Image (tube, rainbow, N blue to C red; front, side, top):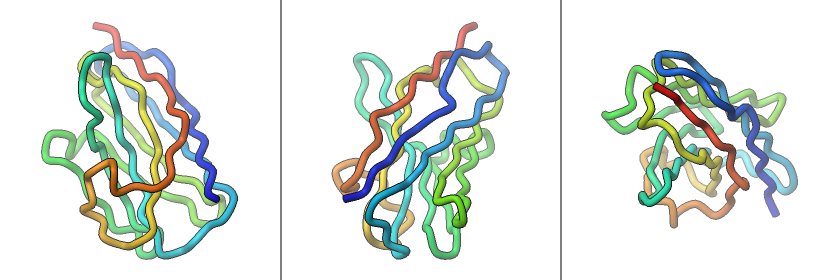
Length: 125
């Protein structure tokens, strides 16, 4: 079993930055893809970014390119999401997810096997 725990959420004003972390523990496997998703109240879950554990290849939806950056620290078994130029519409619960496999452009939530409990990000105008 894989355990994921997010941290770093909070409140920030529009235009500000926030960094999230996702600590991975339990059964780990190198051929995996890690991702961030988010879900705002009343909206569907949305893909935010993904990264392969081996090689660190990244993938973003066009709508978030340039503002969000995903990275990982292999030694610390941690994935990060740096969010810049935040907007009120970025307000959501952010989830870390993991799946076996190295297809970085996997954007559907149901393709991911492991999920963290989520962390709230609130951006005020």
